[in-house]
Each structure stands twice: as structure tokens, then as C-alpha cells.
Image 1 (cartoon, rainbow, N blue to C red):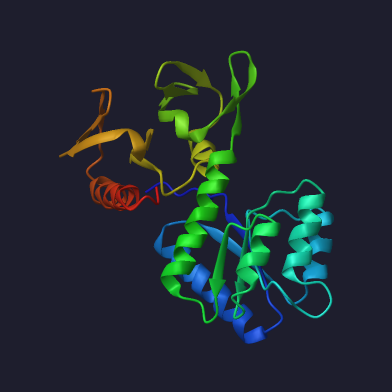
Image 2 (cartoon, rainbow, N blue to C red; image 1 turned 60 degrees about the vertical axis):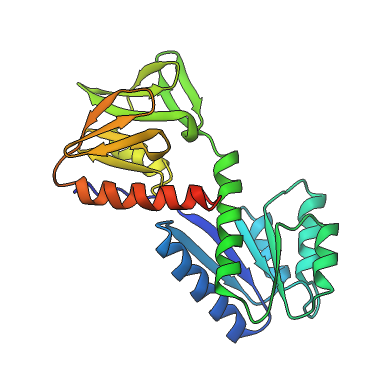
Length: 247
């Protein structure tokens, strides 16, 4: 099986309670592992320290914040970020229901009550992950120089001699990027190797047969017998997420 390093979903947890901070981070790690989303979770006791880290260049895809703390709280942090034009998604986690109203002032993605319900945290994490994917583009070498590509538009990629053929719905072109590098740049739960030389976007798979899959456009791709089980499991999880509005 081909192993590739995956870009990680970067999350910051900021809570003044060490117990709550550790529990939120543990739950998030467990939930995302179950969703096949590689993540890295950083924990902060003080919002001012988190703000300083972000102003110093640290980047996150999602912030899980306690709204009110001694000194700077999550509400203050979110307001400061919005004032700087930073729209990183924010989830407030608090035992105070009034904080849900404060969240609207700074455009929070979700508000969760303590103690945190695992299913509600899962929904909030996946909402943040979808925001990340919707915004994300990757830069790939193409025939006319570096080209911006939205992962959602890529149907499949296949190695071709010394290049990789990128196939989209209405076009295709070759890139010098290595397919292992390309896989590392794409969301792992949506893209899977059906063959050691072919990386396919599950969103475009219509049917899976023995040693073959069919795309929505009728194109058929080979499936290695060694990857049949993994592909079937990932496709099933993808379809379940889509039916639940979480794809």
C-alpha cells in the first residue's frame, strides 16, 4: 500500500480549565480519527497567548474557544481576529447559554454547551472542515506554469510516463507533480488510490465492481484487488456522510 504524508486539519483549543481543555482535545482527536481526517490539535490556557501565536504566523483551520476567561476571552479573541480580517471559523464552548448570543456578534460557526456532547462536537468539527475544503485551492505545475486547482473539481489523477494526468469534468492536462505528492495535498477521506497509479475522487464514483469502478460520466477505472476492501469502505463512509449532509 502506498503511504503518503497528509496535510493536517489544524485546530486550536483554548480553555482556562486544564481538565476541559484536555477533554475537548481528546474528543476532537477521537472524532476526527473516526472520520479519517488527519489533524493536529494545539492547546492554549490563555486567549492572549493564542492570539500572539496567530499574529506570529501560526495558522489554524478551526478555533474551539471558551468565550469568557480572565483577561482576554474567546469573544475578545474572535473580535480581534475579525478586526484584522481573519475569518478563521470559531466554535464557542461554554456552560453559559448567554454566550450563544455573543457568538453572533463575531460570526461564530457554532456554540456548544458544557459538558460537551460528542455528537454535537462532531457536527461542529465537520462543519469547520467543510469550510476549510470550500476555501482551499492547491497550486500545481501545469503546461502554462503554476495553476490553481480546486480539489473538488478533480475527478481522478493517473500517472503517465514522467507526469501525472489530471482529469477534470470538462478538461484534462498533465502536471510534473508526483502522484504521491498530489495525494498529500488532497483531503484523504475524499480521495483514494484505486490502483497504485490512479487516485480517484469518491464524489465522482457511481459504481464499484470486482476489480473495476465506474465514474459518473461512464468512464471505467481499474481497481487493484489489494485496494478493493479499502475503496469499498471509504466509498461507503463517503456516501453515509453525504446522505447525512456531512460530505
